Image 1 (cartoon, rainbow, N blue to C red):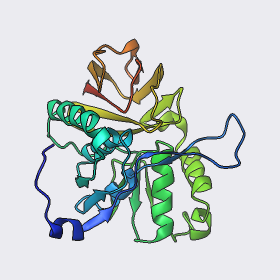
Image 2 (tube, helix red, strand yellow):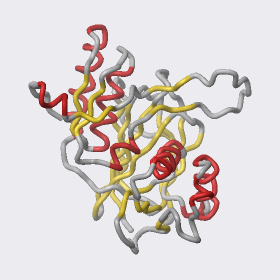
Image 3 (cartoon, rainbow, N blue to C red):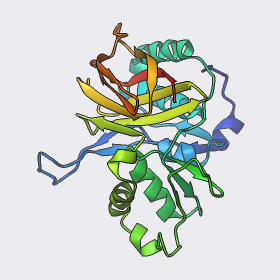
Amino acid sequence: MEVVAVEAADLERCREAIEPHITPMTGVTSATAAPWIDANGWRFQREPAAQYCYDSLSARSAPLAAAEAFVYGVRALLRVPEPGLAGYATMLEFLKKMGLEALPAVANFGIVDDGSDVAGEVMNLMVRKNLLFRVVSEAAPELDRIIRLGTPEYPLEAAADPSHFAALMRARLTDEKRLLRIYGTEVVLAHLTGRGTRYRLHLLNYSGRSVDGMRIRLLGEFRNLRLAIWGSDAREPLDVLAGRDAIEFTVPAMSAYAVADLERVR
């Protein structure tokens, strides 16, 4: 993570990145209604080489935006309002300590991107449902499912309702095969990366409030779990259960961003 001077040409090359936050659901009164999360993870995974601009940030969302760009490894320019500079600066310091090594995304799904709006909405909903995917151009045997819209298995009419399509993909995969499951919150989005024995789980909280007692389950055998939480001295995960098939742990109170580093045994 570095800070660089910005020229007019940089701004002209920018793709829009929206303010990361939760949008109130007007007219929705159900206590169980899932919040609508405005996030950029699907955009960043779709075009990781593009340059992005966050032009409409609040003081509260500026640190989250910095973390979001860092998590997906994209180049981003942020217009930070003066009241948000202090929080933004502390986030930059935290990200520097996390290191710059880029680990590849670990996923259950591969999505062949046809460039359509429908494919973009499917990616958006899958990110919001924490259904881990990466964009692919061909078959990838390490992935459980390859989604290619417009085929008999994944017809376009099935993807017309991306929320329903994401639920369908979850059902076809089954929860038992999901690499990642999060319990106790619907406002934290995750991005899992790894290579060899080194794995890193990024957790982004879009609510603007602290999330307490979130439970994480990762498929696989792991050890040496280490936790870092922005704005907190907490380093130890709670109630760790490490087995041969999966590891579970609870994250203490976190605000915008937390990182779990693990060593994979198998």
